[in-house]
Length: 181
Image (cartoon, rainbow, N blue to C red; front, side, top):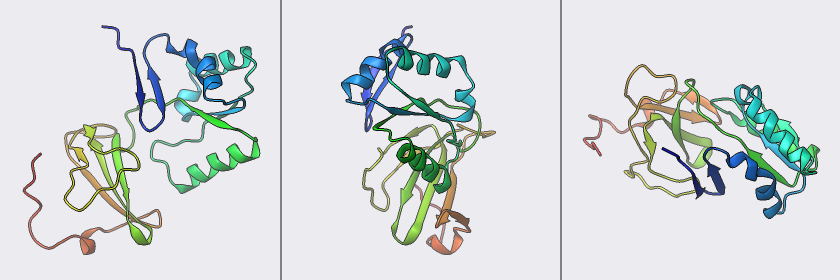
């Protein structure tokens, strides 16, 4: 089976065997001349990242690698990436993402008012997209066992100003929802 495709979620995503050969042309077509190449430390150590950066360099596209993206990124990781982008005078981002058996696996974070975020982790799939508004009761994902997990379950986490807190005082009283998808 040869899996190849293009997505726009929320930006252009290309996947499939050999698609890395299209990288320089894709960067140029996006009008990027000095990209910041963003990935995680594990992927940064692979030949694939070295090859991708080499392809860009060979095409005359100056790039810098930023590999401080953690499996469960917090505000500091994002701030460091933004700082690297600004300090390097970059005009675009090339992101190489993968999956690993660590952390929350597939997850959704919902930003509420007052610095409150809810995280739903280890999902088999997400039912919402980045930037989508959701209301109370909207299913955001399906229970799974992705990431650092020993079986299918939902990891629910509440954070206030990026710090995990006990969610009990914020949950409605009574039994859990009867929703089963």
